Image (cartoon, rainbow, N blue to C red):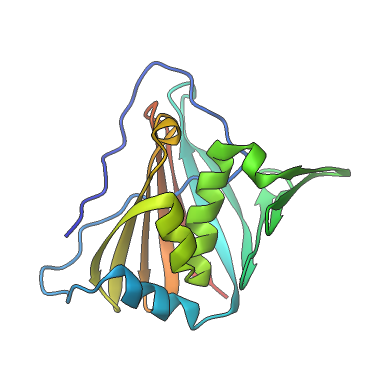
Length: 199
């Protein structure tokens, strides 16, 4: 069974991403039946669209306490993903293909996803998992799968050496076709945990 990397603390200032950084993985029961990436992606790809609420805690060495946010997630295969934060302030990130639109209040801007590689790796991890896109996952990550359909864990490490200096690992846990928890571990020791509740 693959094990997620433990969050590390350092004194270096963390990279502040507007995108999600997510949950701490827990070990699975020893009796869980192992299955592979192909089986997991087929299971996830059965759901072509979905919505969920989330609660996220971001931990940073430059802050005295975690920053908590809540909001909604939605996706539609093959390549649409939206994260709408409701608290502590209203903002949203919408991704369609290689285009990312960020909105905060009445302001918005659109950028190309591949122009921000450290954000792209997080988007591809989340979007690729939600849509069951095996090709995208294998193109961007070294992937390890543990558990079985009723309780699985997917550990993703960026293939690009430069990106590994920013994002060490994305750990995703779920049941059947529903991811329930995502942890993003940054190279400087900062991390975030997102817990997801399907609507």
